[in-house]
Image (cartoon, rainbow, N blue to C red; front, side):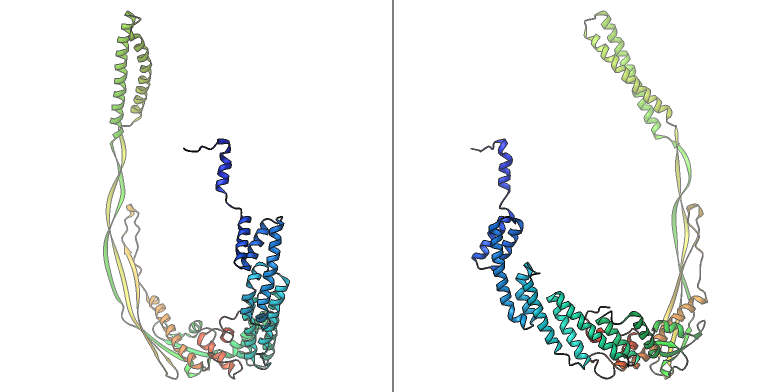
Length: 490
């Protein structure tokens, strides 16, 4: 037997069947289950969620307060030893359950601060007050704990320590050579952006560039490119070079450039284009269709008129016959047929006998694809004669020549052959590339020191800064010393 629900009760039945336990009830049940299996965090977090959903449920909120207090006590007890010892990872791990629920709890923040102070004391012990390397190691040590602790008191401690280190670097830099002074100040700015103003950094950089840039000279000989190529070469090399007289032999470069014979080839292609060449008059295909439609409509009228006349005649002889009804029906139909005929006649009258049709034609035109090639050789040599550079290239110039088809809208594309300046530009670019490559070797040889594995305390910082500058043409950055993961403020 199939049970039927009374219509008035149907919405209530659907509601009862569709709804399960409320979120509040689900959290309470989850909390009870967690308590039964000894999961204090599960108990506290679920009772806490239930109380937030229903703050007026006193029993659940009392249970939440009790569970949270027990979780806090257990968490702080577990974190006490590692936190007081400054073992940041272990401390944060132990405090994580309660911290996730009550991150602003005063006792929790106090314990995190204790951990930060203990860790900071350990980091401070790495700095002997004399070694810059040790000073930076202590700052790096402090920073390692900043993200996991993530509390304002420790953040302030790190800022203060970075500022103190930056000020120490600035003071130390005052009596140093230009490269060392710039690097120490740039490192100080990385540690604390407010310690070194931008105009101070710009002045230090300008002084370093003035003293570190090496004079160079570049002379080029060859057709269309002979002359002083120093400015163009310096633009490629960057601020490590300056065009000036008195360059040492390794930084004096002479370039000899020459071109071979020009070879011209072309290929030809005939293309076709279709275009509208005129119009013509052709019979209108609609004319015959509309004549047939008119004749068919007239035939309907004629036939209906004949049938109507017969029905009317029979009706007059016998008013009771069915012909009288048929006569009335035919009279009504005749009006419709006549209207359709008149419309067909008007359409036929308005339809021209012929229509205009577009005429298309095809035209052929010739396209030529030209290519000129010329071999080149460039030799670059330092004044000392060391490591000469020779490069070979083949310059290519292409152009398309096309006949015009005005009636089809195809424009003429005239031939635009290369001239001497075309090859001169390419030959000059090759010459500058050769002089740049030659001087790159000279700068690499001038770089006699490396930052890799070196400390700031070790002698030769000026040499390391300049060597890095010579090999990269960029000012060396503090990450060379502080490490790539170190976070610079600026």
